[in-house]
Amino acid sequence: MTETDEFGEELADFERRIAELKAARSVSGGELPTVLDAAIFELDHVVGQLLPWYERLSASGTRRSGASADRQEQHLLRTVFQRLPLPVALVDKETVVRRLNGAATAFTGVRAGYATGRPLTGLLAHADRAAFRSQAAAVARGEGDRSLTVRLQQRPSVPVHATLAAVQPSGEPRTTVLVVLQPGGLGSPAPADPPTGQAPDLAEATRHASLMDLMDAMTTTLLSAGREPALQAAARALHGRFADWVVADAGTAGEAGHLSRTAVLAPSDKEAAVLEAQDPAACPLVVETARTGSPVLQIRPPDPDAFGRDTTGAPVLVQANVTSLLCVPLQDGGAVHGVLTLFRCGPRLAFSMAEAQAMDMLSRHVALAMGPMRPPA
Image (tube, rainbow, N blue to C red; front, side, top):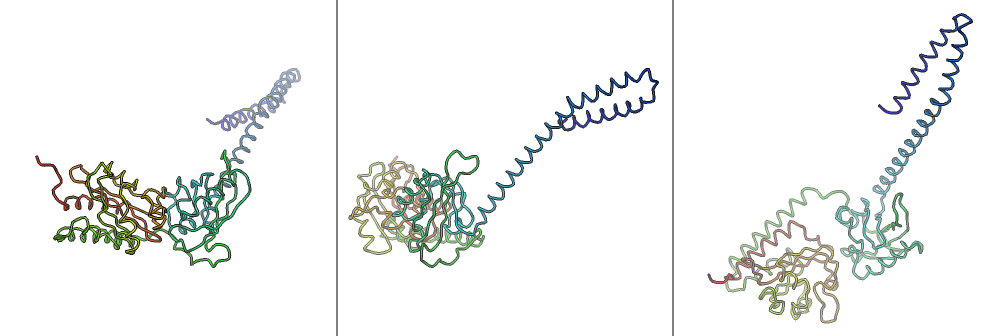
């Protein structure tokens, strides 16, 4: 029974006793003092018990009403945040995303569930990341609002004006940075509105069909390679249709010094020549994949030096504008005999988990086609 129910019962009992006292007014004069004493006792009960009880219940109801109003206000603010037509994100001082609204999801092409917990700088071109992190940290320290022009990694030709402001959400111990992205940058025309909503099922079906086509093409290539080495034939089948760059390294697994660059297929022969002369041992990603025998999928690679540097000293991933990569070991019977690395660049759709799984399967087929690799019994 709630306190309100108990108060209601007590009040009902009081009303019954008052009714009895009213009826007792007709008693003889000698008994009236007793009735008067009972009436005074009931009045004391009202002043001493029922009135304070009522005040407690009223105050509690007010608090509940205030809490309910706060919840309604928070719900309204969340709705406004999600439906705001401008791309908006809430990040911490390290630019880690706390919330991403629907417009920001459509504009960046990244789902809110994926972006949450990851740095917003991962969506930006490499050259803009340090400046954005510095400005976000300054805003979080209370040094005033900031703005700067940045570019998304998948659309480097389109400037984006980013406005950063400090906010203190209710219940949050630290300052949060509100980031508003205005497509087009200052003084530039805004690009066409990005598509909104979830990708239709037709797109998923198309990607699945493309995967099946790739697996068919790879199988055909490996079975009909003839005198061409299987690894080079596989790289040729993957280039263009599946990846912008294909880099193949073959050799003894576990020792990066024994790996050698076998094939490089790039958007241009000039770009390919840069990596053909690169030592695989200078590529941390290749070395780690060969050592562990585990495939690696990275979306917007966080470490620009993961694939080493070119002859000019610039990070390969930055120079090639790599937005996603796959690095898979070529292993047969548990032994790694090479590494295949795939890059996608610019606005091209990033590698998906399904594509990474398919590539992991194809890498084992390539390893088998490269020749007998198991030691004799």
